[in-house]
Image (cartoon, rainbow, N blue to C red; front, side, top):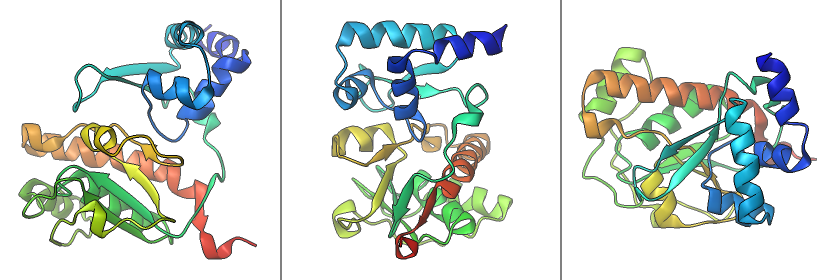
Amino acid sequence: MRRAAVHAALGDPGRLAIVDALVLGEASPSELQTLLAMPSNLLAHHVKVLERAGVLTRHRSEGDRRRTYLALDPGTVEGLWPARMRDAVRVVFVCTGNSARSQLAAALWRAESTVPAASAGTHPAPAVHPGALAVARRRGVPLAAAAPRHVDDVLAADDVVITVCDAAHEELGDAPGRLHWSVADPVRRGDDAAFDATLDELSVRIARFAPAVRPAEEVP
């Protein structure tokens, strides 16, 4: 019954367009409306149908608490992940402090892909957070205690940028080609379990996304 409901929900071109837009990252309803040039009332209808079928979830932004983000349920739509969608010179992960999520994401990416990776922050912290260093040691992730860097000193025009922080995504604003992963900030809780949960989520996302990206020099 659940499978039939999912297939029925995906049978409408508008709903399929929403799912396609969310395959590699989250977006707010207003971002989807702009991206898909879809009237707000029609978007709201399609989102409700997808939520009822268990295809979409929503959560409140950690940055602007008035904003919500829509995300695909991984277990429901696992078969939709693409085999190849991006060619990249470099992938850059961005959060606010560049002290935990973006640092861990870049370290995990380097273990999964030959595409180079870097990280940056919109308001860099003085140092990598001890909790991030500790979870990396516990889990065998090669994370160096490199000084956090500002986005202006890191980003290049041909980077594939992935924000892993709601506040950083909202501060940088919309940009063509940028992806957003709405990952909870482990520093807010500060305990080992929070950093383990963040590392687990980033690991799943990167394992799913990395095969879809190839080094730009391999492009014919």
